[in-house]
Amino acid sequence: MTIDLHALSIKNLALDLHDDGVLVATLNRPAKRNALNAETVEELVTLFSAVPRAGVRAVVLAAEGDHFCAGLDLVEHHREDRSPAEFMHLCLRWHEAFNKMEYGGVPIIAALKGAVVGGGLELASSAHIRVADARTYFALPEGQRGLFTGGGATIRVAGLVGKARMIDMMLTGRVYQGQEAVDVGLAQHLVEGSSFDRALDLARRAAQNLPLTNFAICSAISHLGNMSALDASYAEAVVAGVVNTQPAARERLDAFAKGTAARVRPTQ
Ligand code: 1HE
Image 1 (cartoon, helix red, strand yellow):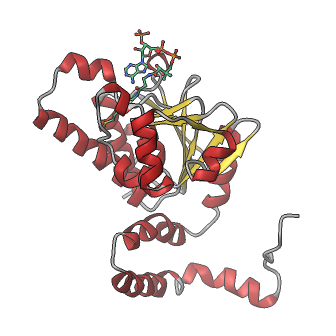
Image 2 (spheres, rainbow, N blue to C red):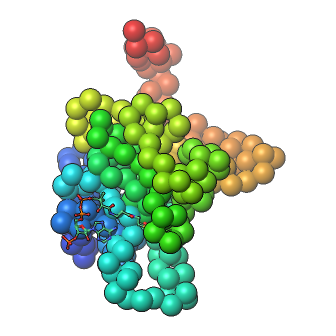
Image 3 (cartoon, rainbow, N blue to C red):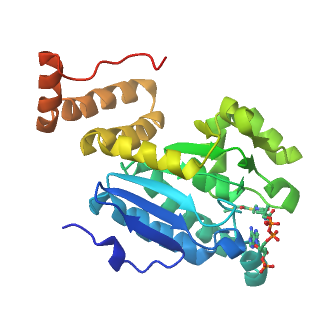
C-alpha cells in the first residue's frame, strides 16, 4: 500500500511531492532558526518512516529562512527542565528519526545554508549528500553551551570528519565553511548560487536510478560499514546478488551492450 504523505500529521515541515518522485521537505520554523523541538523530531520520525513506502524516489531536505538548523531547541530544553531519563528518551527519538533517514534506502540530499550547527549538523549528517552555499557554516557549539551531542554526532560527524576534528570542533567551537568544509568532508558540494537548486538537480538525477539500486546505496553502505570486513564482504555479495540481477536493470544493460547507453567520460 502506498502512503499518502499529505495525510500525515506534519506541521513543522512543508512537503511538496513532485511528479518525478522528488519530495521537497522544508524545515519550517524560520523564526526559531529551525531549531529542533520535540514535536519536529516526532514529525521527522513520521515522515522518514513513511518515505520508503510513499513512492518517493529522492528527497531534498531544505530549510525556510536564512539558516538550515540551529540544533536542539535550547529554549524548550531549558523550559522543560528534563530529567536525565527524559533527555535520554528524547535523544532516542532523534536517533529513530536520523536512522530512518540514513538507513531508509531513499536518497536524501540536504540543501544547506547559514547555520548548520549542533543538532542541525547531526540532522545534515544523516542525509546522503550535503550541498553547501557560500554562507553555510558548520559547528558543534555544544561544548560551549555546557552540553554534549545526543543526536548521533559521535557516529556521523566523526564519520565525516574524523574523531580528532570533531573533538577540536567541540572543545574550541571551531567553525568550518567554504572549501575547507568540503575538504574536511562536511559537505560534498559547494555552490556559488543556491544550494537548493543544486540539491534539487542532484535529487532529480538520483531519482532516475532504479529504486532498488538506490535502496542498496542508501542503506547497504551504512549497514555494511557497521560490520566486520569479513561479514561486510559476504553481505555485499548477497546485496549485489539481488540488485545486479533485478529485471528492471536488463533494459539498461541491453542498451550498454548495444552501444546506445551513455559512456562514462571526464567532465572536462
Ligand atoms: C533558538 C535556537 C535554538 C535560535 N533553540 N531557539 N545550537 C546552538 O547553540 C545554536 C543556537 N543559535 C544561534 O547560535 C543563533 O540563533 C543562530 C546563529 C542559529 C542564528 O542567529 P540569529 O542572530 O539569526 O538569530 P537569534 O536572534 O539568535 O535567534 C532568533 C530566534 O531563534 C530567537 O527566538 P526569539 O523568540 O527570541 O525571537 C532564538 O531564541 C531562536 N533560536 N536558535 C531555540 N537552538 C540532541 S542534542 C543536540 C545538542 C544541540 O543541538 S545544542 C544546540 C546547539
